[in-house]
Image (cartoon, rainbow, N blue to C red; front, side, top):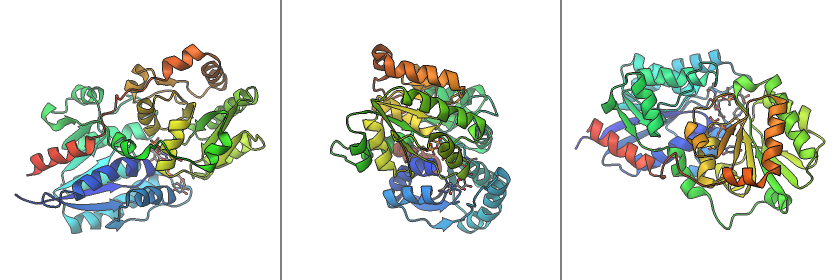
Length: 369
Ligand code: UD1
Ligand code: UDP
């Protein structure tokens, strides 16, 4: 049997969390795959945290991150720097993930070199190019380029069929993010921050979306603070993104309130265990919307749109937008109304059974073999 050369390209925290299980799966099958890992370094500390947790050693690192990087910087740096790597490696297939600028630029580079692309987490859609921005464009563009679409759910498969993507190129695999979750949550987990929150209802917060930078983010933080100041039995932990713009807004609105702690980004094992012990989650993140249903944790999604309707249908997610009064009202309601809380707290697995990586590896072996 021919041994296939696969290059996996990623660069941000969430891509790493969802690609590392696949890297490990492909590397565990050396007779079938030669597995090359290329990171762009769109993120630095937040990427390296994940690589360390999964014990992944990279073959190529493009080191593109710079403070305050623009979409122009990331796109052009990745595109130009990855050319030599792909020319040198000449893989049978390049795998990219999701909807970041790394994914888009890497897929474009592979296309220019006529290297077939496989898209992990294909077919997510809001159909609004500005929400999330620029991710909706990135994911649609990557799906135009890709030969293999690894769709996490039936809904994402249908989205691709609606765009006339050939049915035999679409594979429903589940989301590889759930593969990671299977190994992280532990009964006996403890952490000093959780000791601090013991006896209170723990609210977990994250925020980073580009379209929310500026006033929308200030509105979110003001709403959260108002609700929590009125309810002494709550404590919040906010592992903050490293983007200086996010940090500035958070410190401006949330400093001086001692029941809310802003801490550095948590390693993924810690974050998953914090989720598992939280009362509810407030976020604009994508990946957290997939993980929370498995853990049965209610999420208020501080965005106007979601590409994860499965979690809304399961009852775990509620879209609350970025209006201060709406977030204030919905967050208060979820804390004060036990029936409402119970209705959102059921565990379900709309994003897969934790075996997505094996399925993707099997499909690649068949398709490339
Ligand atoms: C990126 C992705 C977004 C994804 C998010 C996950 C794009 C356009 N955006 O957005 O889709 O949801 O990652 O978190 O691809 N920084 C550090 N260290 C790090 C990471 C970031 O210092 O480890 C700082 C840098 O100053 C950097 C800034 O954060 O310039 C923004 O990072 P960037 O990757 O451009 O945007 P994100 O908002 O992280
Ligand atoms: N996460 C983490 N540490 C943190 C916050 C989040 O490991 O301090 C994980 C989380 O469990 C999820 C992923 O990071 O798997 C989400 O990343 P992010 O919100 O940055 O990006 P998005 O999913 O919105 O693209």
